[in-house]
Length: 415
Image (cartoon, rainbow, N blue to C red; front, side, top):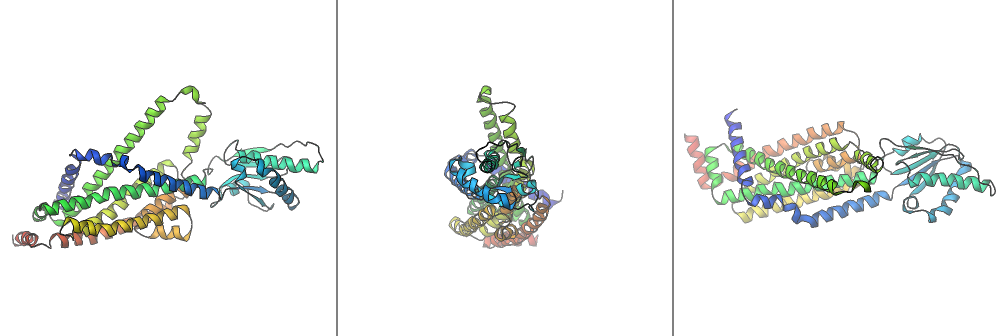
């Protein structure tokens, strides 16, 4: 290991232990418990996104022109008596030249709950979820049209139901997951990266930074601090992941097995959970963690570089305030992009360097394409390297701006 890397890891270990090996770190770990209000705000935002996306839900019926008007009349008669799901969905009549029903059900931009095609006496119904109310509703529409034409007779309708095995996850749910990813990355980044400013303010106040500048190259100090705080952030996340799993096991142990249909409801819930994010849970969580690391490195480097320019704790707090406000703006931009996937706003948020980690994490929930994330990771890594390059020089200029620091530097150069 080169002296530069050795010094960097020594500083990283020092900063990591200086935070973790203290009683107050326990309070820091439990900080999310004191942020229930922000969590509720995020949940309300996700719920609003789900409600807005749910308004775009539809039922598609592929029918001839001769059946279209009769189906619309039947829908107008029956809609008021239907429960919430069919009653709030838009019924769209498509011509016989429409794509395959499965392709219609998987179209982006709309939540398609059921697609009916074929003759009304034996329709083919592709539904997003097995035994859904939407599928039964379109079968009822077909029967209503046939009864009206049969002048009181009760003709038999033999629908053939098919459920989507893949791609059937609700777009509203996927957008809510995207918003949740944006909110989690923003909250964790702001909470954890902000600790770099507090540590820097303390070390500038007690002159520890001057001793480090005299003994270790400032590049090693900067990168070591950044790496040490990243280790604290990973430990923080790992702690809450373990707590979440432990809570889940305790909740599962307290459940009454008789209250569950072991083969039915549990299997159906597991299948629904496995298809929630468009890219799958494993990829979604993994790429979300990588985007968090990149976002943390971006914001942490900026905090260190800008915070080093201040001479007092008050100045550090004043300099960090515009960065925090800017990050809140990036959160708003990414949240808007999560609610409008595929739009020009979402594209801009995914390209802009500061909002790109958040917006791309949201995209992983709604877009099944995975190769685009490799390009995004390369783009963001380039900007992380550039920001660190600039921040290191800002850090050097800020630390060496005092007379005592210059004296240490000259003594090293003279030696």
